Length: 109
Image (cartoon, rainbow, N blue to C red; front, side):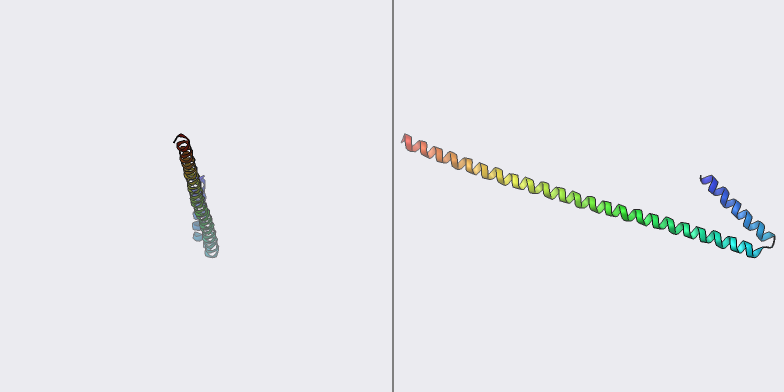
């Protein structure tokens, strides 16, 4: 594929030089201008594609970072809620045991 493009470019240059040597300066100028215009359009197209890809990668990276942050915050929140529930359950169990001890001591004593 690269070799074919190289051959096309060499052939185009040979055509330009041949027409220049034959005295067709206007035709050579038109061919040169057309080749230059095609080249600039191709470069612009490549630049646009590159910019679009960079934009999409940036959006993907931003969404991924926000998604990771959101996941971490939700996980931290569930841990925090769970730890609060565990603390409340431990306190209620302690108060139940203290109440049970107090009632047993009253009966024994």
